[in-house]
Image (cartoon, rainbow, N blue to C red; front, side, top):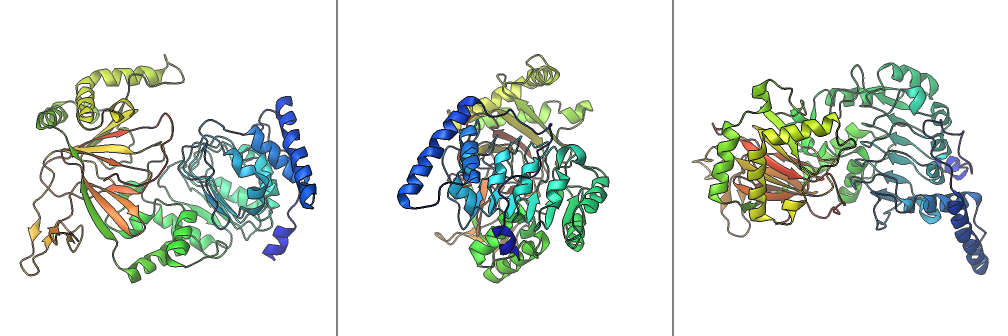
Length: 527
């Protein structure tokens, strides 16, 4: 049935999109440019004896030209593997133009654009007639065009954690209702899509469609629960129980917590690519995919643990920074609301570079940022000094630093970063490892039952308390020692802080970049 329905995909998009979503019409220049590839394609097709390009091919070609090289789009064409194209966490501000090229448009079945900065879904999305899974989670979307009604093969539409308006202004409900194969619509954690939307969407969509909406409070990026309707209600209830806690409540020692930052399509691909266990999105939801992954990992055995150490800063700089962090007046001590209140820490705040560009240079945000930097100028200067001792180039590149006191970082992904970050920790937060007299293996506060043994030397390595741990591969995690050291890590991979058990405080300085050109994602660590 599904293949028959997909073969009969309509050649035109559904009804016109709402005015709030509509962009400017194509210019005469775009129309003229579109005509050239159309004529060339017709000549090439005739030479090969193929059918001439269809009207849909023409539309896709025009869309590819009209959206060519948008600001923030990737410049190299990633390869779609088995019909799936993964463009998550690329700092994209627009859907790349090459997605709409006719050859790719006709073969693409899964498109992951999650964790970007996309503000608009172009009308050209209607070209992707073979698409079955579309993940637009964690972007900056306010509405979805009615052109999605042309995606007659679509089974899953993920819109979690965007900025969607109320349903009447943000979703083309009629177009979605006309999709014959739609099984899942996820609109959780959109601040203006509240619990009543569940009833509205359930009434409009077929009973077979699982609709996921945040009950009660909306808009929590990493928690708050989820509601659902349709045949997948049980799956949605399980997801609701899982997400009633925030990301900061995840136990970083558990494999489940380390996998949870990934989107469902990413988890599904890992299950298939790494373990050969292919699942059907139509009958296997996120909870079951996670359970299958945990079972596969258990059969394979524990993931390898690699330990590396960052670059040390000078003793003088370390001492000066620690003294400043211990004696300065943190925002909490001034009875100010903490930035990012759901972060698990005694205190947390950020400082932006003086040359940070705000939309309104004299506005409230710019004024407050300048005042905050002035108050904490001493630690800012010391942080620059430490970075210059290790990486002169990055000292001129990072856009801000985050300062934390007793931060307890659970597994998460830095969705706003456009490149790797550096982490530095200070304080007497570590507890000496205890050696088990029976087995001779070092234990450390219960983070792992067994210490790591260095494959080269055979030396026993206890877990690095308070270190940054990052998933460096499907079967490996890397512990990065940051105590008095600057370690470079790509936060676009799941990462967390290893629990620490000393009696002293832990302070950290995180240097990160959210502006400028995107650094391609390559490796989780650089050691």
